[in-house]
Length: 171
Image 1 (tube, rainbow, N blue to C red):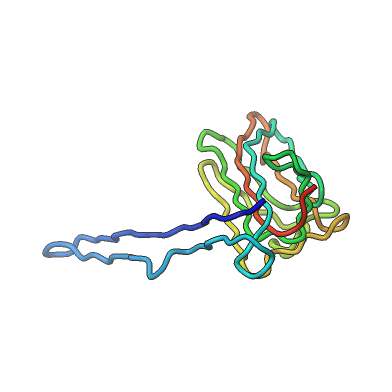
Image 2 (image 1 turned 60 degrees about the vertical axis):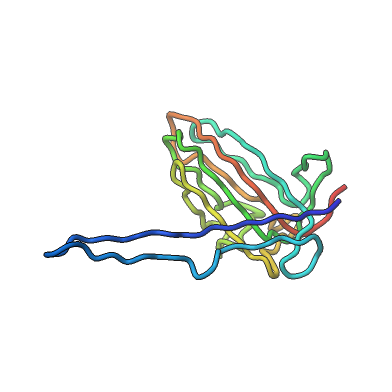
């Protein structure tokens, strides 16, 4: 099996303001694209594993995604991540509530967040993109491998798509 691909984001914008005569503009043209061209392997700027899924959480519900053995890829292989080099969470635009990523009570995958109780709220239509192509975010089986994803409130379900790219093994 081999993994190749690209993750990128860029901002190109024109910022304008009316002045006494005419308008003033400021163009933002990216000096470079933010991102990573993925090569297959285990070194810097390389990855071996990819998992993605579109999921739904009921009102006030949460789930813990086990990055060290609890996810199955598109080929039916159980994935055991040792490092996450990219994490992308996309909250559906039709959501009413936020999708909360992080904050696991125990065995939390905390390396991108700083602390196991830290979390990021992904607003409806928003995206959380974390890219660490050199060494990635460490995953420690049994003690630091659960990525908690939660619906921020009651009343309605939330839909989200998640992608994890990284290093490890597949069986």
